[in-house]
Amino acid sequence: MTIRIRTFDRADETDVIALWQRCGLTRPWNDPQRDIARKLSEQPELFLVGTVEDRLIASAMIGFDGHRGWVYYLAVAPDCQRRGYGKRLMAEAERRLSEVGCPKLMLMVRTENTTVIDFYRHLGYDINATAVLGKRLISDE
Image 1 (cartoon, helix red, strand yellow):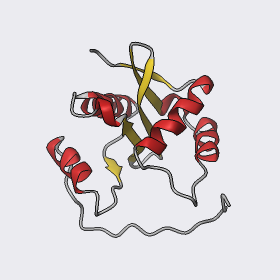
Image 2 (cartoon, rainbow, N blue to C red):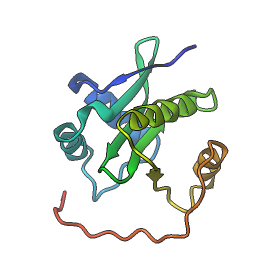
Image 3 (tube, one colour):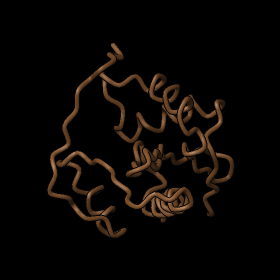
Image 4 (cartoon, one colour):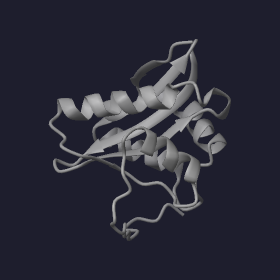
């Protein structure tokens, strides 16, 4: 079956959050509704979902800051994985970022998630010798 990739619509919110939960992407310190609201305020056209036969089965939250592109919340429903849907979604993310002049795409994967690291390496992504630092400015709790 072919995946249809389109821009997120507000009506997708419940399905997207359920997808993220099924894929283990949500964390107690990140409110998914707030993450969606924040994304919709910045480059909403870069928030993608994938559907198969009208079922929402994939998502990717993409951003470009003028220097680098980033992908967050790439998810494919567990029962739909290993069918090329994630690869197609990443290709669309790369295409859209290339169109706006993005020279490099970055993403973060938890180091223990070796299956996902292997997925990205298969797509041509390399592990960079950098440390990602973070500081919470607004609490979601």
